[in-house]
Image (cartoon, rainbow, N blue to C red):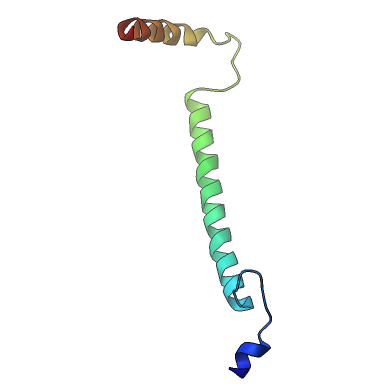
Length: 75
C-alpha cells in the first residue's frame, strides 16, 4: 500500500515504463501505417496521375460516357 502512495500520478494512469512501452508500440504502428499509405499513394499516382499530362484529362472522356450509360440504365 505504501508503494501505491509514492507513485507519481499521471493523467493516463500509466506508469512511466508503461507509457514508454505504449509510445513505442504506437510509433511503430504509426510508421508502418504511414509507409503503407505512401506506397499506396505512389501506386495510385502511377495508375492515374492526379495532375493531368500534356493532353489534359482527355482520357476521362470514355469514363464520362460510361457513367452516363450506367446512369441511364438506373433511371
